[in-house]
Image (cartoon, rainbow, N blue to C red; front, side, top):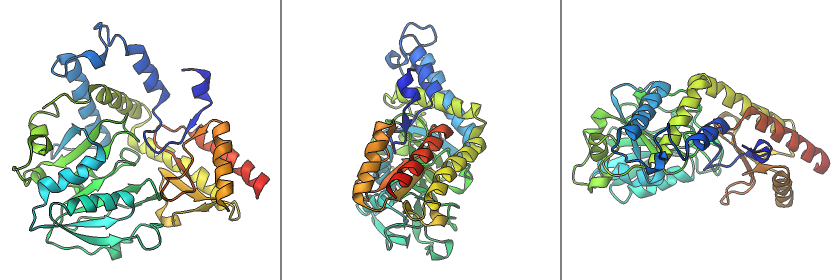
Length: 365
């Protein structure tokens, strides 16, 4: 792709880095897909050429995440934000309650949306202390009356992550894995539903992956608008209306790339190494860099940190941009800095960031 890309380090939180070799393949086939004389964007979603792409994406995701036939795999639209409403529309009646584990802004939004449809309760919360940590297992209060228990596996804004995901304890467990899906192996069988916007680890924005247990889907309310019923998309194999065909095509290429890397275990090892490099600089900086997350709650996807003053934070971000680093400013709601080290961020980018951080601390500490 050009020299400029080779010297640009993409730490954006989402949409975020895509593998360069995937983009090269897209570029090669953008105008004429596999000799058919058309771009994949121009083809009918009912035609065999696109359906082969669609079906391969589903089968590769099943292989990578070890998804059994007990679960359906859907490609929807609307991002995780639509799922915040769609899940309670289908599974939470007005006289029912759902439990929520609050670990950041996105879990708060999921709980707020659910309140429009039924009752909610907070099963555990880390809000006190500005979401610096993940609740420990002993803090979770289970209730057999819950229609489901909702967890956000990773928190992009605060930089925290469940090192070990909670158990449902007999309650259907629903997980928003938008920012760490495919970054480590999870036992899909433990979840009634997993959902994720694609734009962090799976592909471009515009596609939402939903993995749902068939017996959980069987409980869904049928008196829901057609496009907002999971049943609609299950029956049509996510082809009820025109899906985001180009996004699903790129997602399929990313899944093939992930398999070439050595599948999820290899990605997980690489992610742990990338994050450890940056956390080590933070921990050795004698307080110049201060991590937001408690050590046992640190995210391997989003590394959040502060500098001694807001002025130094602005200077650090300004210098980083000059040197080809993108996306290092923290979320507007919390400030500071954030490095998002998703699957497609190469190890070399983390090494370069560490060099920048050490040099900046030396000159400004």
